[in-house]
Image: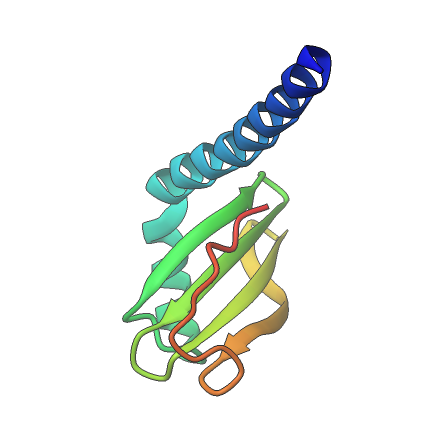
Length: 110
């Protein structure tokens, strides 16, 4: 019985550590590269950037951004690739919008 409780606690702690480390990595990436991508998004003028921008993944060759718009109430995942020294958007995917997830914003971190 003690072994099962110990195993359950170990599993829960492992899940929390995995989620926490990905969250910390996202926050570090956002503090380093968030303003750069905010400028890129403003220059593209496709999405409302008055909300939050999170840099989920970043490397010299690619990046994955999560944008939450305050004004229009949606969340979108944007993928960028470094082409000729500039980050160019290669895809975007709406994760949620008003109506499909009213009053609920999942902390989208992987």
